[in-house]
Image (cartoon, rainbow, N blue to C red; front, side):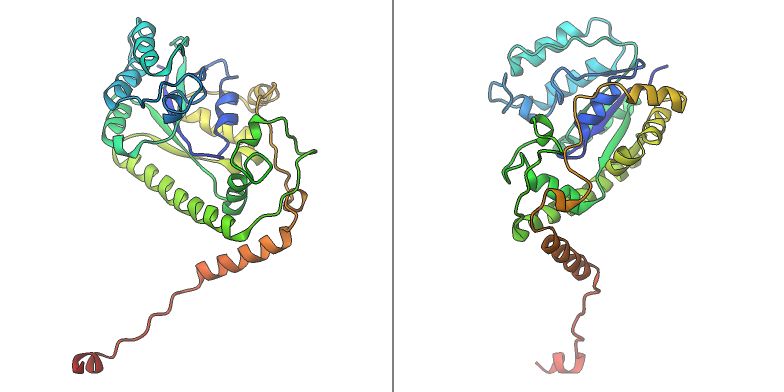
Length: 286
């Protein structure tokens, strides 16, 4: 029996590289025609979009067609999908471990959780732990300090331009990342509490221990492969490449200032808060 899965991701967590790599495994089918088939931008901001987000009813129907055992699923699935996404068409075949990635829609939590539990779908939650690097990745964008995705550009580590980072703007990204990590951990807790098999996947492990990372992931799907077999798959060409160097001074002009400010920020965050003692007799005499 094959185990199907879903990957919950947010921006700049390596999700594109992950699903692109998973799609190289013969035992796995990634619904990757549109990279993120059920993210809102596919319906509102995508190149084939008509400006209307998919309804919750149609979303649940699509996921049901994907995960259930029906054979005549493509015609109905495409009929629903094309009513929102223009000429986009699904072409995937069932029979393998099937999955895709998407951002979690918290307002549809009950419906998503119920569906995942009913079809025994394994959930993976992407988490990026290095807050500073994550925030810089969001801040850096397309290499000009503006919003964008470096992995979709022709930029490489060798020709990555240095930028001047403004701490005030970076700090906002850091705070967003810290909140996002808390949200991801809460999502994991909620999934497990609902009876769904849910596991974290850490970006840092993907970068530094790829064989162990995928061995762990595959085991959760009951796929047994030797480390040598996994390595052979990982050595195949990958569409998405690492674009940020290991050392911050290679792409940040004022890296010393940023590191110092971040250290100060962390120290303030970890410092216990002091609360003024309330004098009860004095308070009562007011």
